[in-house]
Amino acid sequence: MAEVLTQTRPPVTSSSGKAMISSARIARRVRRLGRLISDAYADIETPLVLLVILKGASVFAADLMRSLSIPAELEFVRAASYGAGTASSGRVRLAHMMQGTFADRHVLLVEDIVDSGRTAEAVAKRVTRTKPASLRLAALLDRPARRVADVKIDFRGFVIPDRFVIGYGLDYAGLYRELPDIHSLG
Ligand code: IMP
Ligand code: MG
Image (cartoon, rainbow, N blue to C red; front, side, top):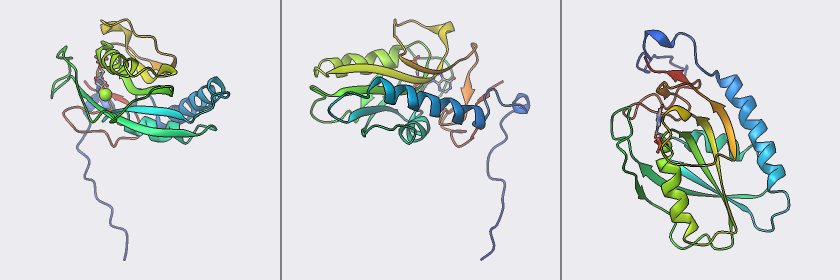
């Protein structure tokens, strides 16, 4: 059967002609982060635990995991603070956190973007209670302009200006996660 090409993606906005970060640039940076992370954890004796903060970080995590040259396991936590808007509501709800514990495991939180920092902080607090061997944070994007919580990003992809972004897993009201580039909205 012939491949049928249809345009099903909603238009991204007039300002989106040029991507803020192209898929090629993202790919290069993610591979580099993968090497840095593999080096940092080269001597650990248990597989690294990637704890992915759903949903936005799923695309980044899938690429990052395949850039690693060390054994890694995959866990997920669902965190939501935004609802359908573009400004943080200030409260973070966590769900689907792995049953059991990260005791004595090396845990790397994987986040799409650190904005206020409240999400990463909330997940880190919860993980810390289970006494991991170590806990670090990898974030594809860092938007320092709206930071509230004092979080340290150990592995960082890009620092971006104070604009809401979509694509490569990042959404606006659930849409645009499938875009391969990162665009600023408006
Ligand atoms: P924080 O808790 O304020 O640091 O916000 C982090 C979470 O909010 C991220 O995991 C994203 O899911 C979401 N978020 C923050 N900024 C953006 C954005 O510009 N686009 C899409 N999602 C965002
Ligand atoms: Mg997120």
